[in-house]
Length: 75
Image (cartoon, helix red, strand yellow):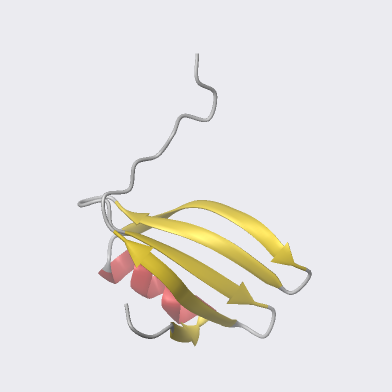
């Protein structure tokens, strides 16, 4: 990915879920005005990290392939 891809937060969420078939796997607070989310496609394991800003803009700041999740409470 050569450039950061930004859009209106609601529109980017719709693109990730409807067009790409992705599901949000986690969210964390970066600072008081910014959150980071990890999105993963269900079909092929492509993943995206989305940075959300308080002004209603979101940007895909990283992406890759072959996501491998971990169990929340391993035995």
